[in-house]
Amino acid sequence: MAEGKNLVGVDIGSSSIKVCQLKETRKGLALVKLGFEPLPPQTIIDGHVMNTSAVVEALQKVFRDNGLKQKDVALGVSGQSVIIRKISVPLMTAEELAEQIQWEAEQHIPFDIKDVQIDYEVLRRRPEAGQMDLLLVAAKRDEINDYAELAREAKLKPICVDIDAFALQNVFEVTYGLPPDHTVALLNVGASLTSLNIVAKGVSQFTRDIANGGNSFTEEIQKQLGVAREQAEAYKMGGTGTEPVPQQVQNVLMQVADGLAGEIQRSLDFFLATSGEQEISRIFLAGGGAALPSLATAIERRARVPVERFNPMSKVACEAGVNQQFATEHGEQLGVALGLALRKDKEKRA
Image 1 (cartoon, rainbow, N blue to C red):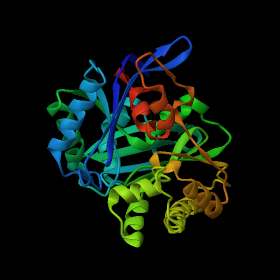
Image 2 (image 1 turned 135 degrees about the vertical axis):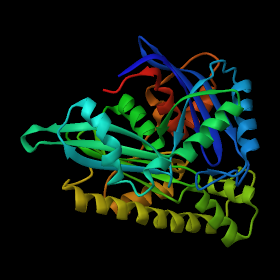
Image 3 (image 1 turned 180 degrees about the vertical axis):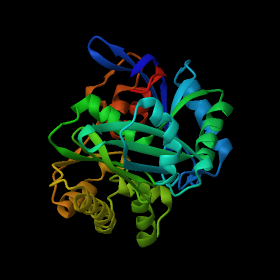
């Protein structure tokens, strides 16, 4: 249950920091503040911060430049430091579960239990079987502490840490609702990581992080055309308008898109083979990679499932002072930050 005031959502990605502050109005959600700050290349690699000072300076700058006074923030984590499992345990009371969860987690988490932070959510109680289904989440303490310390160094106050895939699911639920009779896949294609979250019957059933994203398109253009990174990035996004984009670029984009789509398809096939679900009705594509038409086309062809671009800003109004054009053009990159901004400073376990 959520109560209290909304936290500021801070999404520290491998290529940029996105910051959103929301408020709830009678007409729905409104974006009060929006910040976007690029990070130098190689600042964050595989979820690990390699250049602490660059992240701290970017955090300070994005809060200062966008007039963000509130310092209570929600942070997101993803990647190999996070493990998500759907498990079944004997039926028990909330108090018994709180006492037993560490032992239950030890049976399912491939890390030393002392090195991780555990959280869980009861998905379903099945009295007839004497069982209950849980969503179990474990994140490495070092990773959480590293990100929290970055925020503190930037004079911010981290209140909660969420999982990127769940943050996107939260804003998706606000935008579309979670259909109780359909299974949908939420894909967030970032610079270096693609997060997959399959939601069935309104509940997250399967998550996977794929170590591939928008950077692989840029790097392959660099490699095949022999151009600088900045030029390759411009070609990837359709050029600057001052010179034609070489025909070869489209071929490169299609090759890389097909490779990433193949990895996504294998994850979808694995879910369908092991879950008992009959089909996935639709795939929603968010993140910076959603802007690449070749990727949506490749995923749809491989998975044989309709693909729709998901703009998390579609149901969020912009208050005066927010760059509405930027929010509209880059809305697909703001999903995690918006989802984090839905978190409150006082929350109770349901």
